[in-house]
Image (tube, rainbow, N blue to C red; front, side, top):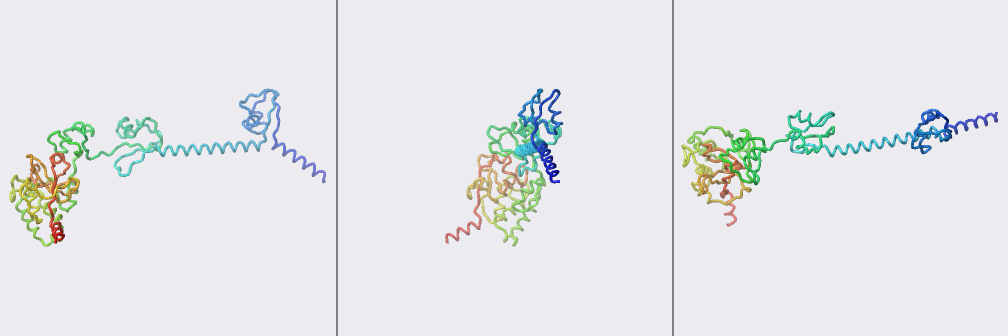
Amino acid sequence: MKKINIILLTLLLFFTSQVFANTTYTIKSGDNLYRISKKFKVSSAGIKEANDMTSDKLSRGMKLTIPDSAKDKKTKEAKEQTASEKTAVQDQDKAKSREVFIKKPSPGKSEDRYHSVKNGDTLRKISKKYSISEKELRSMNDLNTSRLKVGQQLLVKKSEPKTYTVKKGDNIYRIAKKFNMTAKALKDINDMTDNSIKPGQKLFLAKKTETEDANDAVKPVKVAYDKKANPVIASARLLEVKELSTSDDLSQLSVRERIMLFAKKMLHLPYKFGGTGSIGLDCSAYVQKVYGLAGFTIPRSAREQFQVGDIVDKKELSIGDLVFFRTYASFPSHVGIYLGNNLFIHASSLSKKITIDSLEAPYYFRRFIGAKRIAQPEDQEAEDDDQS
């Protein structure tokens, strides 16, 4: 029995060594790598690697080392793992490249519209879908090639600015062409009677809605405002404002708030050149009346009003300041009251009533000559206290 066990153990070791040890095989006529690999149950690549072969060519009598199947399997697994790792790295590189390439919408530009590129998309298809030319699509996205990537974000509609600031060398025709409009349309939007513009001047590219005008106009003091309303009866409105000026409730308002209240209560009063009362007011009479109701005594004409108060830089304008313009004469011939947000209220000969306009409107922008701040009662009292 002991002898039989020894024989069995010897046979087991022999067959095991045959499975895991390399074998030498002599090439016969008709052999090829495929037949040999199938015969020994190893891969052709494993045989070539074990023999440092660079081609599949064999010759009769050539001796090949046949690797054991276990080693060949490990080599195959190692190669597969290496290939898998390489693919993963390539995928990561592609992802990084795509992250850099994608143009995402900038914060605060919600009106801009983007298209996410899908499989099969081309510039032609996208441009046709959004009714823009391929050239424009390329320009908006700074594209130097027609090749696209899935997931790429393309700008297909850019929000148009509502205003344009005039630059040196600009003219009405160039600006109009830039924004795909006619010079006449641009002039109409900005109430322009001629083609003259100045660097730094702001031009509106679309008319404001009445709602936008009203919302901007009433920010300092909430008073209903309709720019297209007809002039009101002057005598009745002036009586109403005069009664309001004696109300005890006004004691809770600051001087500036009272100026704003009286100024806006007179909105839509008719304009009358030289008028001071029941039939209408001109610009300086209107300003004089508003300030008079608020407790100030100022001169009658715009030319005289320009001589009082403290000079204020346009960038430092504050609610209640007086703004002056040269219109029909070389001296200050028009005046209004600043409301904030580049708006002022005035008795307008153009609108034929007391109305609200923008300092950036071309007509007033070109004619603006300065601003003055009238000393307020609180300021004067503070000065008196300092002196005492």
